[in-house]
Image (cartoon, rainbow, N blue to C red; front, side, top):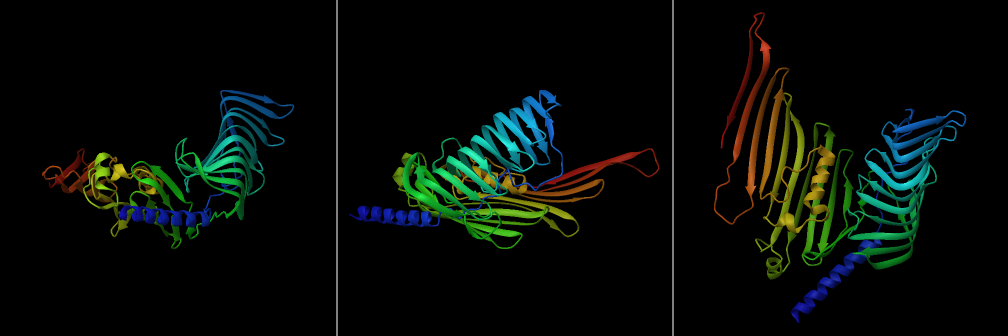
Amino acid sequence: MHQKVQKSGKLLQFAILLISTVLLLLPFRLNASILQKAKKSKLPWQIQADGLNYDSKNKIYHAEGHVSLTSGDKIIKADRITLNTITHIAHLVGNVYIKVGRDWLKGDEGEFNIKEETGTVKNGIIFFYDQHVYIRSAIIEKTGKDTYHLEKGTVTTCDGEKPDWKFKFDQMDVKMSGRGEARKVSFNVGGVPVLYTPYLSFPVKRERKTGFLFPRYSNSDLNGFGISTPFYWAINDHVDATIYPNYYFDRGMMMGVEFRYKQSEENLGMFRFDYLSDHKNDDELAEAGYPRQRKERWWWRSKSNFTLPMDVKGRLDVDIASDKYYLREFDIGQVSWDESDFAFRKLLDRGLDNDKSVLARESTLYLTRDWELTHLGLEMHYWDNLDRSYDEYTLQQLPRLALNIAKQKIGNTPFYYEFDSEFMHY
């Protein structure tokens, strides 16, 4: 009886969370489309191909084989491109690829007006890098400066050809500075439609603004169905935070937070922390190959670049987890190793130091001071060994000090000197 009541309570809690998510649905922010995002530039378009012919009478380029059109950060590629220099329309055939910044669009064929930056792509997929959102559509049409029309498509934040969840729509019209409207919309989990609405209107936000992000869903045998409703907080121009409650039907509520700051290219950082009081049955965990080590589960990872007085530069990377199975059990969505590594590379151009299978998690501190011909560096490494199955001391490297002086001439003499030294304490 107690188990039935507990199960009913979990179902009710899950239903309330799901309904509230749908009600909040789609106040998500997308960047301006990759066909519109880049500022119009006076940079000329350049064309390259394996084979290139020019019809001087009609002023048309015929290009075939690894064809690319480039202008600044805008790239258009296809197997074949026909470019009319009078109408500015490029006809694209085969393996169409359009990229502006870090957003991209792929499709089978289409046409693009390189002057007006309007066009159509058939059987296409758009990826918005900043929001990690994929939109697939039979027809992707940019109809104006910031308006789009899409037909028979899907929207998801999941990677891969078979996403855990997606929204399917028959038609969608979007005005990037206003709202979007979708018709015949269904929400699908694991390929199964669970919700349907004939019409959905949603705001589209291009600017950095506080609000709910696109909800995310997951499903696995170990964790059950999962739902996350991230809330983005634009604290100021240089600092933001994202709070993401993740509810797992078989595990309970995992609370997560991401904090980012960027004062300059040399002073920036991000930390992520997730915490779960695990409700999973011990026997079920053991049967799945993850015997219970502790009920309180968490993972802290952070990376930062900073400067100190006297032109000292520093880097601090921290990676500490509650137990050795955490990174294997929670491998989907914001809490996963893959997405954290992606986020760190995106902000700091470096990912996590250790793969998710490594049990000795490494944290490091680097301090450096450079002169014209001299380098002084301090390193500290700490390994947190998550394998508690045997009693063995983990060797630490605290600290390492290095002084390097490049080869240089001694005054006006014909002699040179250089110096390399290193001190290390274990």
